Length: 75
Figure 1: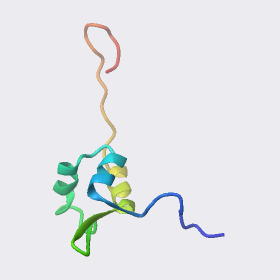
Figure 2 (figure 1 turned 120 degrees about the horizontal axis):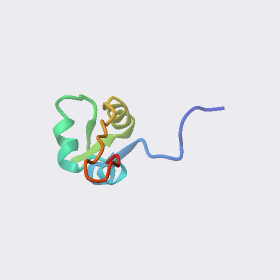
Figure 3 (figure 1 turned 120 degrees about the vertical axis):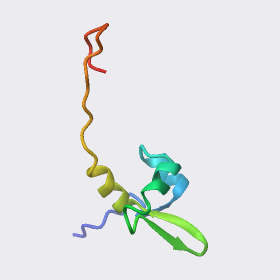
């Protein structure tokens, strides 16, 4: 049995990658220099390697949630 995921496209246009994840287009372009291989060029089109994108998201630190002073709830 193959381990290749055929349910999700490996490469997407930048606008489609921005819709898929939490980062917008501007943030994605900002990551280009720090993470080589995130963007590829094909026939004049910039595409995002979604596998690399997922790896980048996995390296983000967890959020520190602080209680709201007025309601004592975590926000």
